[in-house]
Image 1: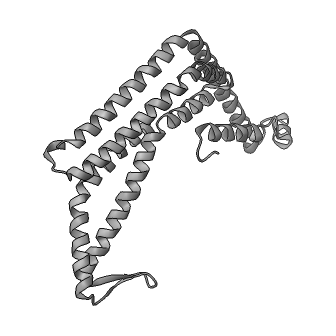
Image 2 (image 1 turned 30 degrees about the vertical axis):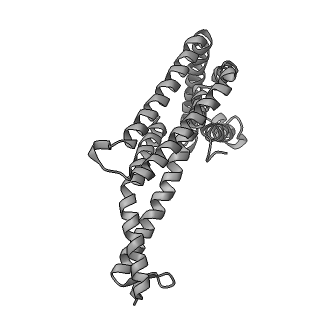
Image 3 (image 1 turned 90 degrees about the vertical axis):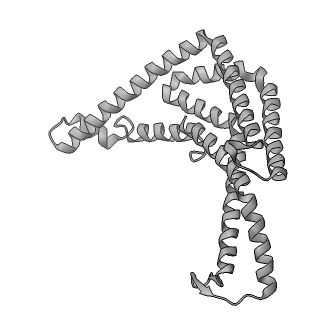
Length: 251
């Protein structure tokens, strides 16, 4: 859970802070009660005071965020709808731009049409799912607002998880594009070694010389030519969703 969810990581961090706190550690609490005579006890006291200040500030900021979102719930929901609509329009415009002649780059028409329509279909499915989940947004906003009672970091972690869930279609496009791009790159690399009369020795982890037959060379030439001419089309779609997913990851 902690590897896939920001909320899980934040809860784990908060539990670790509680476990290392002198209040829950009898030995550390005893050191604090003895005073600040030695360096270790002083370090424990400083760490404890810092943790208390940080948690207190986090709770105060979380309470303010909770109060603000509850008072301006309509504005927040309207902003979410506006951002979702703007996001869908921007992605659709980018896909339609690629389906034309992006920056004067000539792409394969058939593959470009197929990939572009698949992306548009995925975005339309996202719009349908968004409209089905729209009646639940007030309850979700209420839950997120109440989570601010436990601190602003908990609230921010939940918002981050919701953002990841709302952009899962971008991650799906990016993951599929990355898999295909990696596979295409590896196949082109293998076919390039075929032209040079080389092959990869998997057992010894090196490149060895190899004699290929005429049929193998002809088949390799056809496959290499086909993949080279299709490579710009697949790379443009991979680059688009890589940039979009990177922008979401930064947020």
